Amino acid sequence: MAFASNLNITGQTAGTTRFSAFIDGLKVRMERRRIYAQTRDELASLSNRDLADLGIHRSEIPRIAYQAAYEN
Image 1 (tube, rainbow, N blue to C red):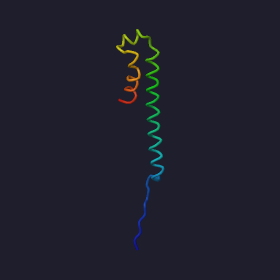
Image 2 (cartoon, rainbow, N blue to C red):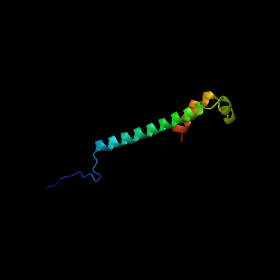
Image 3 (tube, rainbow, N blue to C red):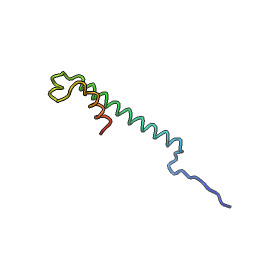
Image 4 (tube, rainbow, N blue to C red):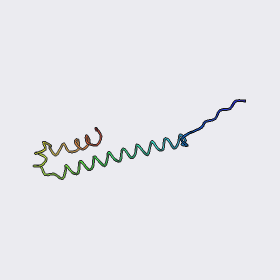
């Protein structure tokens, strides 16, 4: 008589593995969003003169914040 058994060494089922992956992805997205918002807010708080000293125009702030959060 032959039988097959599926032993899961880690103790996680496919559902909990997918849920863990979902939570991990959510954490990454939340951290990236936090970095984006923090960078945007810090740059926006600078005066036009300070931004000019850095070579940044105020209209570039969202792009720079996006690059800081999502393209690293």
